[in-house]
Image (cartoon, rainbow, N blue to C red; front, side, top):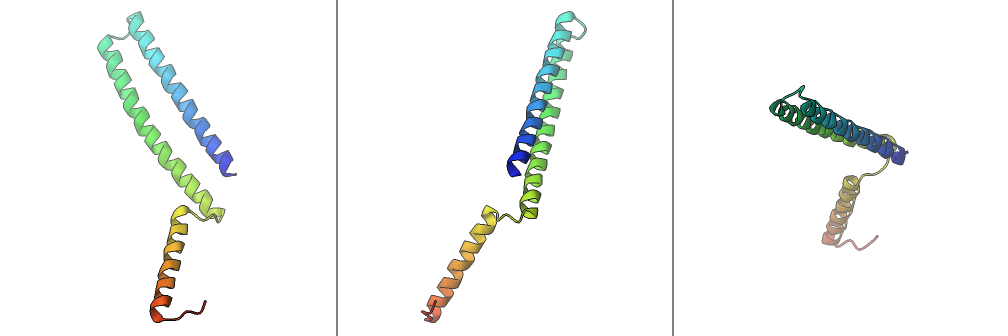
Length: 104
């Protein structure tokens, strides 16, 4: 199930990249045809890049949250949770050995 979610998200990111390339090509074509000045074309591409970067960041955050939510619903232990459990076990072992209790 997790693999399906990853593939779906990567497909969405791929489509976004394709769309960005298409818009850049359109802007270059408009500049070449004289319908947009070079300065306007440059500004348009800069604005496009800024919006793309913002959208990509938001998408990455949503993907991370979706995966976390899925992992929680699927009752899968995360790396952080596992590290916490290992630390707790170490602390308990240390406390037992300090008390001089050698029973296991």
